Image (cartoon, rainbow, N blue to C red):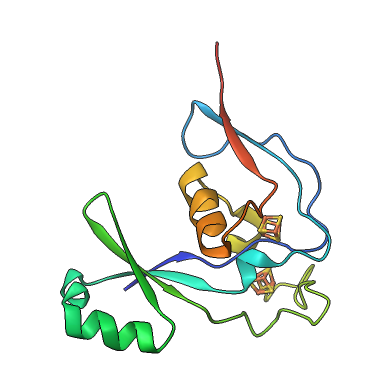
Amino acid sequence: MRLRKVGGNPAERPDTDDTRGVAQDRLHGYCKQGCGACCEFCTLNINPSYLQADVRHWLELHGITLRESAGQVWANIPLPCSALQPDKSCGLYGQAERPQLCSDWPFSQGEIDELDRVAGKKTCTFYFEGVSE
Ligand code: SF4
Ligand code: SF4
């Protein structure tokens, strides 16, 4: 399995216009106070054999949903981060123990869209916009 997402900073992330990963995309947005949506679950890249109906049903009984994308299978696991505080702030913010992934996320519009899909509504304020030069 491969870790795809850990989360973002739910409390204090400033406005940004970082250019990330894909050279043509520019990240806009800010981290909403009291959101923490990206810290409420994790997504793992798993073996496609887990798509077998009986196994999939077993996973769904555990609250885990599967999604196929670009020939890969992703498991959404509704497991909040242990550092997430009741007010949805990050208990590790500003500390060395906080994963760098939390500061860097999101890496693509697809990840933001996936979070919104899981949440059932538009949740994350970040979005990627193509750079026309
Ligand atoms: S879902 Fe987006 S706005 Fe909400 S805490 Fe994560 S990065 Fe911030
Ligand atoms: S360490 Fe903080 S920002 Fe990262 S997932 Fe946990 S609560 Fe969220």
